[in-house]
Length: 242
Image (tube, rainbow, N blue to C red):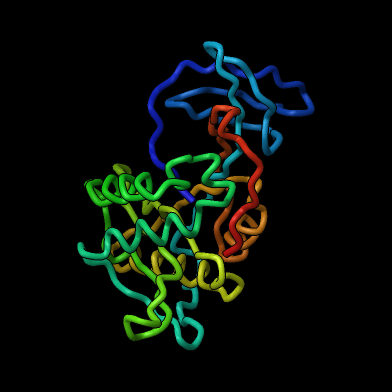
């Protein structure tokens, strides 16, 4: 999952031993970047301006045109719903249900709050590179009484021309069916239809199942960063299962 931008902040880097990191570290906009080396998934709290902070490891993963096209067929009873302006709130509500009890809501607290998800969706929609053809919902059922929003994904083309995947989320009760991989495949296909050859996403390292899924789908790790989170917000949470 690629999170929202962070406001700039002064960050006191934790002291890392050689076992914890063998690479150079830099900080920009609240993100600690590991340029080389191996680091732990979560660095214990460090103090900056009197506030304890925890560092969560995240991977940037990329796939280019050499990655084979992925299947987009959904299980029986499920279907994709393309982007339209009147579905912004459906994306926000689905995002909230998918992430509110997961590790990503610790790393990005706005995901644990419905209003925060609505603000995030408005921000994504306002981005110059927002791509409707890479933005999808998965729905189950037909009539109003049975309709369930089950999964969400958004796509944005960044300033360098890379297709950035935003917030792949599947709500509890619809996991384990491959909906997450189908959402990802649908978004990648949308980028390719628009001439975007390189697709990227970020994922929290503790969400090991998602990391393995993306690797199986042809994404490779290209960079490691540490997202700085105030320790008071870092309650234990389980990663979402796609």
